Structures are given as C-alpha cells and as structure tokens.
Length: 147
Image (tube, rainbow, N blue to C red; front, side, top):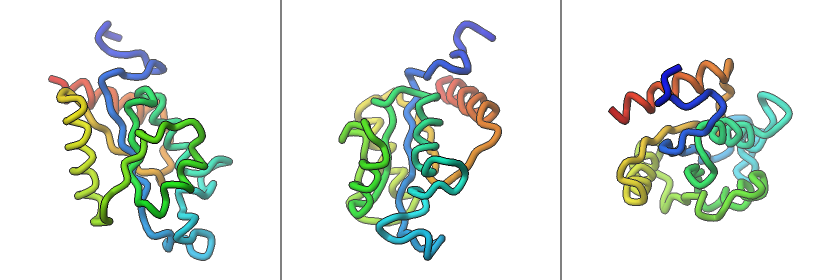
C-alpha cells in the first residue's frame, strides 16, 4: 500500500462523513413510527441501524468530522441512541425537503468549516456487506476526489 494511503483501520483525517437520518418513520409500520423510525430499529444486526452506520463512519474519520443530518422531531431519539456524540455532530434541517437539498446544505456547511473537505454521504438505514471492501472503495474515492 502506498505511504499516502491510510491503512484500512486508521480514520482518514481529511474525510468528512454525513449520515442521512431523516424520514417520517412509516416504511416499516407498525415496527417503525414517526417517533421511532427504522434507523432506530435493529433490522440488520443486534444494534439499531444508526449505531451500525456511526461505527462504519468512525472507521473512516474521527467523530468531530461526522455529521448526522436529521429533522428536529428525531434529534432527541438519535442523541439517545448515539451516546457521546457532541451536539455539533447533529445538523437539524430547517425544513424537510428531501435528500438532495439536505446534502447540499450539509456540504455547504462543511465547506464553510473546511474548504478542503471531502464529503461522504452514508444512509442511516443501510446494511453494508462486506464492510471492508466498501471502506476501501470509500478511501480510494476520497483520494481521487482530493486530486
């Protein structure tokens, strides 16, 4: 592996991760509700989907470079599920407008904070296997984006 490529277990200090964690909680009704959407359910393992996604994000970068994009109605449930995440880690969308607008808003916010930001978007309701292969692809894409 070239020296400029981070190891497969070392977080990439130049990468930012957004976790899309919005929605209305109706897709898996009655298991999911507006107050307990599918991201808070353990559908792909023992942990809620959002916790599994956060652990994947932590393998890519540090906590201070992770942003959870959510609506105000889900802020407290996600804070409770993601113990230890700083309040600044949560970007509460001012108004639900869908995936494209919230990602644009998040990218704009991150670029104001770090003009060299390389942003990866993960969905809080996805199961990804094999994770090692996905992580390696994200790292390669990040390196390509920096060039």
